[in-house]
Amino acid sequence: MIVNAVVDGLFYVAVEHKGRTWPHYGRFIAIERPQRIEHTWMSEGTKGVESVVTVTLASRGAETEVTLRHSGVPDGEMGHRHKDGWAFVLSALAESIAARRAEKY
Image (tube, rainbow, N blue to C red; front, side):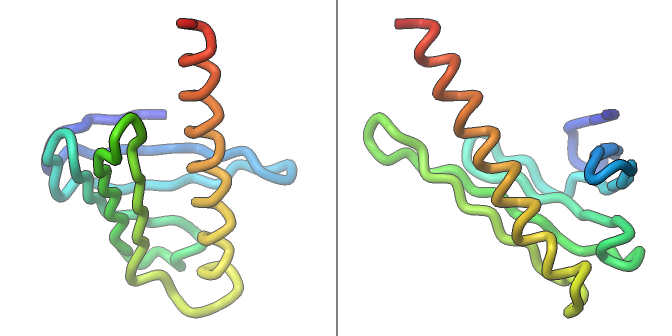
């Protein structure tokens, strides 16, 4: 993984899935700490087309609501698989945060 988390900074993420490596690339469009991150996203699943991912964070008392929107994904099987991929990523993030909280207490 390579990440330069600044506006116009680039990232590269290699995802291992079902015995192969899936490269993903993009650049950060907006970083508004602590409430919004927006970046482009290109992969084989987007057929090389630059799509846009927007993640917003909103405080809800002691909790944080995370909203992820991925726009511009091609309408096809590979494009639709992004929904499952992002669900997996968000679930893993939630589990990681819960484990860290449990370690603290």
